[in-house]
Length: 125
Picture 1 (tube, rainbow, N blue to C red):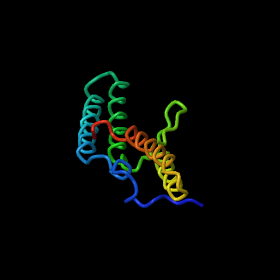
Picture 2 (picture 1 turned 180 degrees about the vertical axis):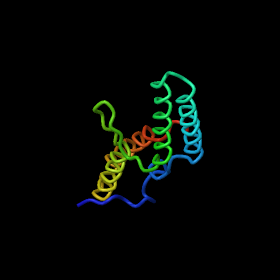
Picture 3 (picture 1 turned 180 degrees about the horizontal axis):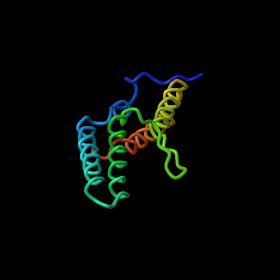
Picture 4 (picture 1 turned 90 degrees about the horizontal axis):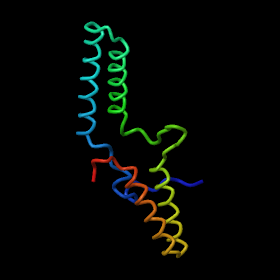
C-alpha cells in the first residue's frame, strides 16, 4: 500500500489553496447574478433568462465555496486529475531516488512540475 508524501515534500502548487481574493470575487459575482435573476423574475416576461441568471449565480457560488476541495472534474467524458497524477509522479520519483536512479527521478519530478503547473489556477503565476 502506498501513501501520499507529506505536504513538505510537495511543490508549493500542490498544497496551495485557491487564492482567497479569487473566491471572494466569485462570491460577489454569484450574489450579483442571483439578485439580478431574482429581480428579473418579477420585471420581465423572459422566465428562461431570469432562471438562467439564478442558476449561473448558484453554480458560481458553489464553485466559490468549494474551490479548495475540488480534486477532479468530469467534463464531456474527460476526467482531470492532474494533482493526483503529479503526486503519483512525485512518489515514483522518491522511490527511484531510493533505488539510485537519479536520472529517472529527475524526469518524474519534471513531469510532476508540468502537471502541477497545468492544474494551478490561471491567475496564480
